[in-house]
Length: 418
Length: 219
Image 1 (tube, chains in turn orange, blue):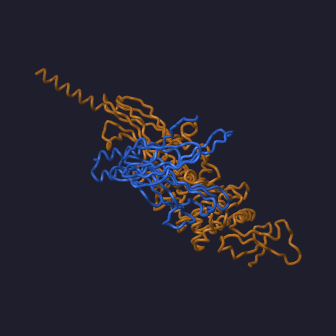
Image 2: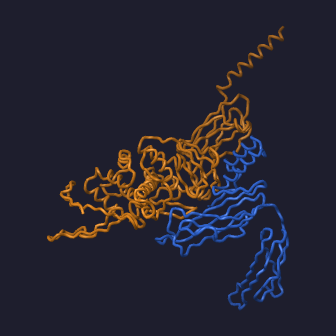
Image 3: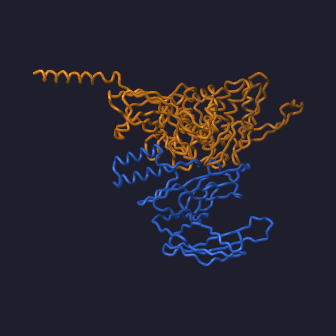
């Protein structure tokens, strides 16, 4: 009889012990996830935090499909910390995996819908009360590390949209590396070349297409386009100006996002300056603050990106603020530059209108006055006016002009069409 | 090099069955005060049923040249011929004069590269007819590099790769990258039941983690 009682007591004791387990048994894991830019680890500034990425805590003793025991997300510094409940007296083989997935996007391997992984080493036989620091640094020569460069660029672009609009755009899938001949946006998906892995200007330009579609900022026919062409030389005028606007604005967006979010502070090569750079698979640099070399009119995307950029960054008091420009675009839903231009200048005083008009002339969008000179007083005799038509490439120069006579008062005193 | 001395120069050539060609060897004195003329020799070769046959060299200059095959390896693999088109990126006006197109290979052997006879030249595309050889198990890439100047006189470079993975069952190619090749192979092996579900999942996990890549620092 005594033996039996003792056995029963023992069993109850074991049961109580099991029920108490979750309260005190846990593994604490923290660390930092970093990706490495094109310069490689020899450069002290080449490692950058993988911001807002999914972190999976895994038990490597378990079959692959069921390995994940907890998840969390890194902060802006790439840091994470997580507590994993663990059965008392047991052990785990801890593996940490950072995924190329954030609230902004999932960078997926081509042919799959799976995010890339930055894996840690395996920490075998960790006891139930272990405290681990697990840092992960990517290998800059490998595609999985590059996926985090692409992801971080898109996160920055999304944050800029949020700053302008108070709207967080839904996460977008990114095929990487695409097999296309260029990076592109199509059907709510980005497709990024391996050769654009470090080119935040290119990646954020493509994300700009997603922004543009989301906020109905364009009506572009899409298709092939080149920086050094006036598209009206190749396509009908209406298609040309819509395509040029559809491509010029995303580049402006990319460069402005880096400027306004102070991404130059990240110390990533080519990020945060005023130049659109496409490196590795090409050698392209377009300075948006340039005086107009290579600007070819409204039907040229370079002219558009430069006019927009200089309109919001020129030091003059008359400049347009990025927020004002955004709000005007939200209201006007432009299909080409002229519509945006009208919206941009509608609320400006004369000085602002003239300043932006001067930029439009510099980039061969608006006519360029030649006679009389800017400082010349009009003669008593009927004055002579002349100007360069500009715009339109070889076939479609500007062909309708209005001469306005202004005083310092913002309202036109007299106007005449020719 | 002293009179009577016979230094050996080792070289490697990969050929395909029936291929003929010529190996060129050049020598030049490094002593600028010497009047020793340059040396040049051409060695005709042919691949006869998998064996490299070398003919007598035709040499000029004061140095005699002899050649012989030392070691031959015959393996299974792929000989691939086709047109490779590379589109200019973002620019449409690279000035035709002075444009150079170079094709080279890493990891596989490029046998020949020439302007395509099938496709007319275009202002925005460059097409090369290439032949390359990849032995089973090899992986590599073929680079096409275009150099020129834009209309405004700026230097322009375009680089594009064709990635290659020679598997015993199939030759995989991609313009995306090595990750694409590995995933293509895993999917093909899985579809053909050469690997199990678990092996497929583990393989994909390894690809996503970078475990199968040797890494590419430069594009």
